Amino acid sequence: MTIGKTRPARGLPPARGVLHRLRVGEFAHGRVEAPTDLADRVEHFWLVRWNLEGLPPQVQETLPHPNLHLVVEPERADLWGVHTGRWTRRLEGRSMAFGIKFRPGALRAWLGRAVSGLANASLPAQALMGDDVQRLAEVLHAADDASAADLASDVLRAHLPPSSEPALLAGRIVDSAAADHELLSAQQLADRWGMTLRSLQRFFSQHVGVGPKWVINRYRLHEALARVQAGQPVSWAALAQELGYFDQAHFIADFRRLVGCTPAAYSQAWHRR
Image 1 (tube, one colour):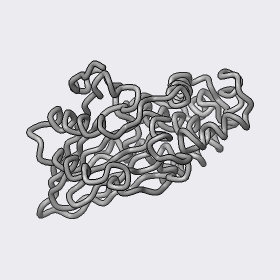
Image 2 (image 1 turned 180 degrees about the vertical axis):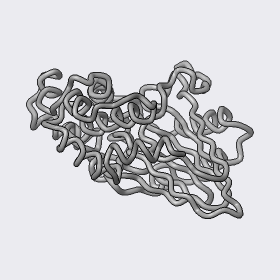
Image 3 (image 1 turned 90 degrees about the horizontal axis):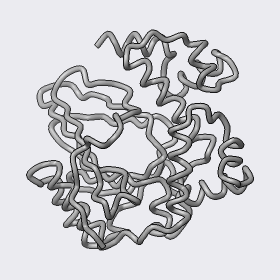
Image 4 (image 1 turned 135 degrees about the vertical axis):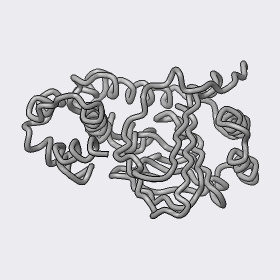
């Protein structure tokens, strides 16, 4: 086996799903690519640091992806399942967090049960890696992001089971849903991969943690957010049609439910900051 070194995020696509920018204080978000021997199971490593000392707490919100994350913070480390709604975190003081974003499908064997059982929930990392969780916690004291990712990679190599064909297939199916904006339904996705809709749903429950309809819908909303944040002129009716919604009203209702406001209100708020 060839053990690679972690790399900066030059080969990673732009981050998507962040709903708000901090208005005051200091905030930094870094990402590091996975080494070659873990790239079939780890999407990337991430670090966030903030300094709000002497300032009011700030709320950070995202629309999560269909991935599990192992998150290391001062005093704790947890494996988080897919969060199906809007993820909200209150930031205060000065602190940081280090995360491992796993590939869809990568953790079914490690968990030993259906990944859907961890949706909107977490599991102490110690349950999966025992006392090595103390070694993993050292990532918070690493000299830089790449060094933190290298340390985490060493710990993962001792615990992550090798990829299986179902795990790799789950990742490929999710990738195809993310890349093809003309893919509009779970049935289309099932047809593309030679499955019945029911078998695809069961497969996603076991290996991804959420259903295929959820995955397609989430990537639709990520695309809509990216358009708004880029400052492009947007026709909501045209965007709703392009993203496969029945009509503009359904798109706006979905956007409001997940983001917390209408697309027009979100656009005004984003560009006002």
